[in-house]
Length: 353
Image (tube, rainbow, N blue to C red; front, side):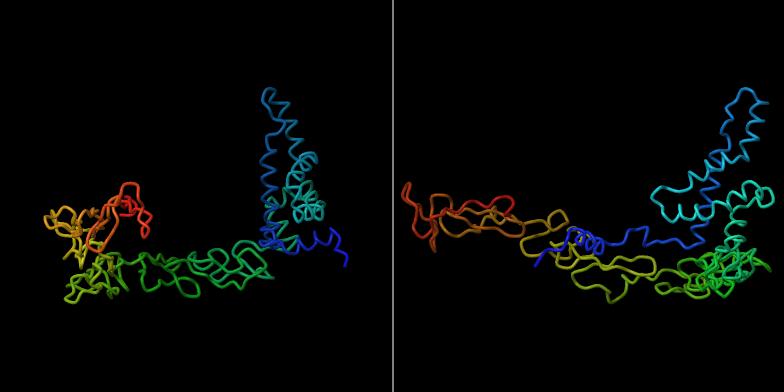
């Protein structure tokens, strides 16, 4: 069987590669048009003072006046609109060059807003702000203040969407005029409503403080006319397990693990232990390691055996030149290596402890 040609491998590789990021975020016709107009306006700003270097003011004003509306300036702007690799942008400029030239030479003074003339009225791919959809209908609440100024109109400025309101945080309702339950109306008249967040202790409220709660949030309780935090950690039955301690936070609590040296604790660290685990004892108010090797009663019982302290415990090791038996560490003949234990035990390293 003959192998496939190299071109087939190249085509297969292209199929397997993930799509380029730009391809995944392909612009809508309106976004393409708006981007082109933004670049055109930037080009106008970049060329505004060209050929105006100072000196002979009368000559410069005459020359600049000619250049301002010239085809030379238009060509310079058009050449800077697209990157060479941006196919869609270059294609759009090529298709619409005559229209842009007509606006520049004949219609600019009558229609100074290029976006409105080009994208909305001529190409009909966008709508004016505050309108949406195929016919550029007014958004909910009107085109001047869509969604009462408290939300985003779906499809605003495009030929898409349904004009419904997507309310900002704290607002609700078809026109975003009302406050959600954890907000209150701090300023309201016939046309405007400002919703402000309640205090964290309030589920519903009429004002900004914990005295203005109509209903307390979970984890808070009303004391006289104020919602105060409930200290769950002070409950008769602790909410955490025996190996944890409780920390109160506003409206709730957390359970944290006790220190590894503790048997039960009241807080963080070895100083908060109720009791110490085996191998530790209270010293200066906190659980500290017991050095079993320094106790009056020997921890290692066999004769000649060395004791090494470890955190919470100890190990017993025969010294070099000694072999381990049931009752003692027995010295071997000089240079002799016991058959049953050819590797002599070494004291544990610091890493082993």
